[in-house]
Length: 166
Figure 1: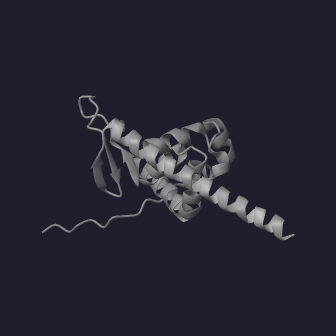
Figure 2: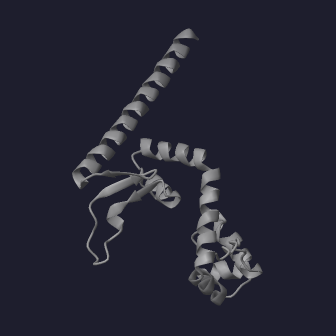
Figure 3: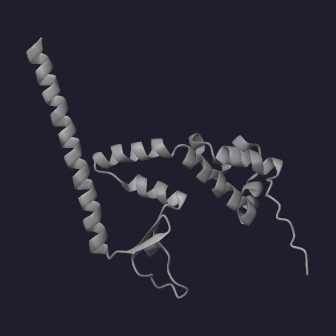
């Protein structure tokens, strides 16, 4: 019986570690590769070779998810505030990044044909056609708008009461 080789945890090189620190810093998320490399004190070759290395990519994704998980409560609160304003696109993107929401339409089959429309939420697949998806999103946004109106009305009544009491 052959012994199973012990798995070793990926350890980035010093240059890759500097690159990771820059890539994971939200202040640098919109910068060009050349700028990122300059901040990390590494060449563009290090950047491109790192992203050719699947272990580096997996490590980068793992660290990204870890950072997002730490800030999850704040992200959810910000997403709710944006949804109340009528914009939920960034919430979908963040949930995609953590793997909590995967839009199946984004993944074609081996022949390039779109897969059936479906959504995976926390590893449970729910098949939705485009009309059902749009209806559910509209319903959620409508409930958020109704909630926002109730909060505003409540605040207005409270303000009116305080004015009458003075």
